[in-house]
Image (cartoon, rainbow, N blue to C red; front, side, top):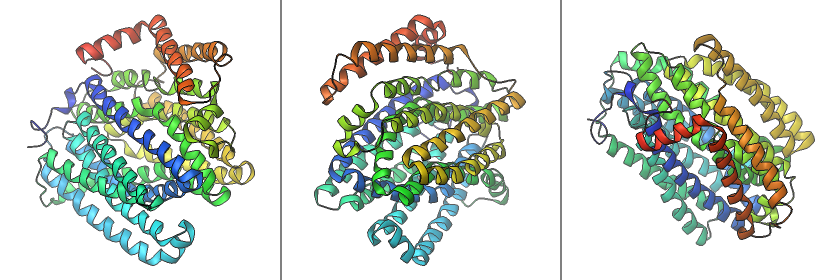
Length: 488
């Protein structure tokens, strides 16, 4: 048995229903993370926040081995008539080897790590986060692959709800950035245990065939995850080297304001991956699911981009404090634009992985990283934070263009839909009205005055979208009331 009522038939999952379940949990997770970073930014200031985020960037880079195995495990366990027990056993064996490797690597590199991170506690924190989060990144996808992608996302929400009070408590007792690391570690271990409990699968020793099938997928998903996270973490690590912890703190805070833009897209991704796997393994076609998912991937990213364009500097200073006024507001706009591209990326990757083509994702990530890393370092040394963000945007243009070419070759043509256009139209109208009607009347000096343009902008955006997009009206009705579209 797996899950509350046993495995689901993955090929018949409702992407709309699973996305809605996942979205609610991600809203909660995002809200918890936002509250956390506001507290951390005001207590630790930009430098202390930058130290913590640098530890996370290094640790998350290491977690990509178990995360890539988790992707392979999710794929194999989601296939029709898969045996979950040996698949879970194979994942846990791999994790044990990974944890041992991380420990040995820490001992070997200790002098260099202490010099880079600034203290032995923060250097050790990389190991704590890498092992605990790595375990969670293996077990949560396994549970999702058994047919519960929506419910699996609530494990991450529970982890966030547990992490924040632990971190705040450790801040209060004076542990500073290291306290944040310890809080995340404890919460991740407890969430991993919960994932095993709700999956209700007892691991068994895998046979050769099971190992071979997981390795067949993981040999692509591991480097893909590694390259994807290297791409994301490189900005933080490069900024720390060329501009210091303060720039990292500003980047992290601005990203926290922009990252909700990809929340809807990431809610779609896991459900789309699992359903695509089931449909593909049964010989079906996935283009309509890709089109429906891509149509609404940018639903939140687009208004956040136009909102950031309206009052970027006021947002940063009001939310995070005066120490975040040193960098130009254009940095927030750039990161919001990055999240638009990031939102559109997820449905492509979900479909490609679900249809058992992980090598394609790996090759795209190799190209993106090969462009981004040297360009980010060169532009970062010259232009600082804006240079690194500019490099990211160049790499994202390459990524999206390549995925559209992939859709043209393998999924029946380039995917560009009317709802995507409608969302940009609604966002542009929102920007013009917010800038004209609110920006010149309301001076943003506090959380209360900040809420006025935010609420006004949201009302305008969704109001215009409802007016100009029949597809959005129908999808909203069916997804909320019937749980069908967005993949049906």
